[in-house]
Amino acid sequence: MQELFNGILNLQLGNLVMFVIGGVLIYLAIAKEYEPMLLLPIGFGAILCNIPFSSAIGEHGILEILYNAGIRTELFPCLIFIAVGAMIDFTPLLQNPTMLFFGAAAQFGIFSTMMVALLFGYNLKEAASIGIIGAADGPTSIYVALQFADKLVAPISVAAYSYMSLVPIIQPPVIKLLTTRNERLIRMEYKQVNVPKIVKILFPIAVTIIAGLIAPISVALVGLLMFGNLIRESGVLERLSVSAQNELANLVTLLLGITIGSTMQADKFLQVDTLIIMAMGLVAFIFDTAGGVLFAKLLNLFLKKKINPMVGAAGISAFPMSARVIQRIAKSEDPTNFILMQSISANVAGQLGSIVAGGLLLALVPLFF
Image (cartoon, rainbow, N blue to C red; front, side, top):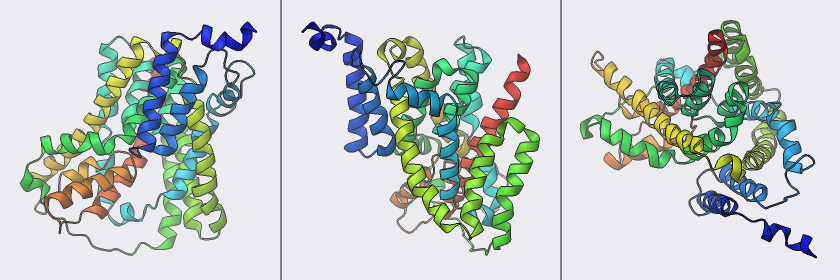
């Protein structure tokens, strides 16, 4: 009879705290619609793993099996990259390739946060894993953390996905702090340029070869992203492209979210490290936004045709959310100012830049050990 009450009798304060955290994530997903496909499964996974003697975790638990098969083997993050590649249209970037610089500048948060993590006493691999939160790219964050600091996967994943969903809250105050109203009112001319189909096809192939030769360890990241994009642009695999964008993306995101949530067990998650990582994740996102804005302001010192500095903030990888946030701010300042296409270009560049940055970390950090 006592076995019926084991869960209640062994319930601890930490479990209750994690129930609340899981509930908050579910609330944000449903009530605020912040990345519901991710935060809802993560929140519910956190609840499942904190029920005492839960059959969902442990050696034979379904979530433990999914973790070993999909996360520890890096399968889920890699499959997500195929889906993301199939979703991304690189045409705006190919029409305006100078936006690549903003995709690079907005990765400033990764390396600055690494320095902060080192000051907090983390070793270089752990610091790189924490810094990659600034990529604003959940799968990249998981992939790098698994390579360098698998014990930190849970807080890093939660931080990455949580702050991605909070981009509409994080970016506007940073942008307004660093820009004047006159800068936010800058109009940018947009010219529609026809990009030949052969260029769209050759682009993912060329990027894969170049990135792979520079950093072979990044091939799983860059290669599968570009493979998904090649499926999209080839024009002969429409059904596969649609399946990658929908069925594959939905299924893997669902399993990835609830599996990541299952790692949020109270005894492992409720630690000082978690609070530090969450705080540094926020710093990384702020520095990313600031890096893009300040880089645009620097370029404006030398350019005749000025760039709206807000576009630089769209260089983070949170696609297409960041571009929409930038356009919303521009519209609030001037309802007739449209900088969405430039922001989309920078945002696409950020998606590519985050993966390249992750690949560089994977290639360079081990050289110091």
